[in-house]
Image 1 (cartoon, rainbow, N blue to C red):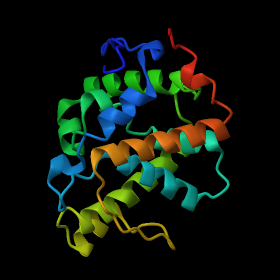
Image 2 (tube, rainbow, N blue to C red):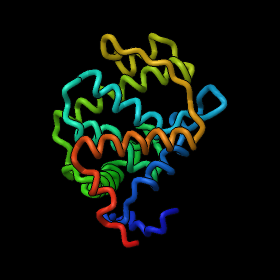
Image 3 (cartoon, one colour):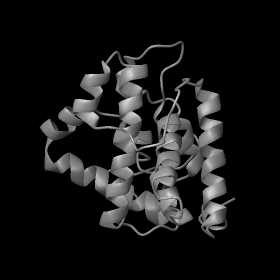
Image 4 (cartoon, rainbow, N blue to C red):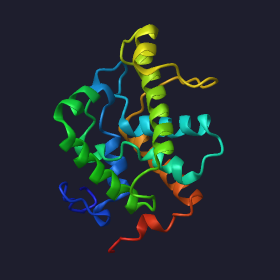
Length: 197
């Protein structure tokens, strides 16, 4: 990693995970494999910020730690990339286990339970699908009907105009949300708990 950490992908340690590496990587990973309109790809970092926002829209009183979990919902993609769901399914259970191990390590690193409670996971998935709906019709060339069929309707009262950001801006926004939510959740010191400098 750019931070100098060496991450064992088969046995990831929370001690080798840094939010700066996550933000840097996610800001450079394109949603829809880059098959989107605009000068810049719509990054996983920007997508994650939107998903966290939608979670808060659906459940306004949700605890900051679960908003942080929403922001980190695709964090494993900073090292494994963003694979489309049909391809993940084709790779089978072993891929899912691999992804789960990395996600668990990321959660532990930032003071979250290794496994997200089922109801929170469902909420995040609902927000993820809502974001995908807007991405599909605004960036990926889907018709409104196709997006509704694939992702369902977005939550009532939530609208989104997507403007894909350059990687540096997406990275900055992701880090800003991470630090704001970590502090609100009472984890501000956790982000540097394993620093060796």
